Image (cartoon, rainbow, N blue to C red):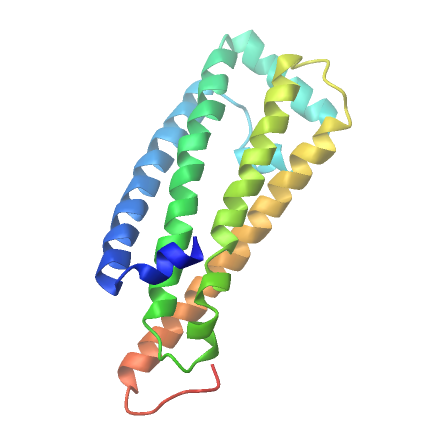
Length: 189
């Protein structure tokens, strides 16, 4: 992926960033709609990071009682499309901002490494979803130990998201600084 990104011009990175970000927001919108239609009783962050098999079994039982477990399955499948947009956006947007910096800066030199945290979040989301499908095969009687994998992958996903956002903020600040003070080369960043 690094070689592919490095071959792209800033204009191509910008186009990729705009397309992937637009796709991300569209996919996020429809994912939220599906989640609401499933009538899952708690926010997904709370469920995914609960580390509590009993609670998850209760929430799955509610889906069965509401008759919306099939909608929840659809939500899980649609999440893979959402994840693809997250991965693409992570590479394009973060790499673009890194590419906008002076070539002699640490941030510029490490722009690829800085762009991998959102795709890593996507990877952990995929793993979380795969575990959830195993759990959903027996929604009220799955092995309780599966919840540790499920919530562990979800927690790593949210950690990578957080790191990615912090990195993006740093990159944006560095780009703004570079634009405002372009006569000065800030080699320390």
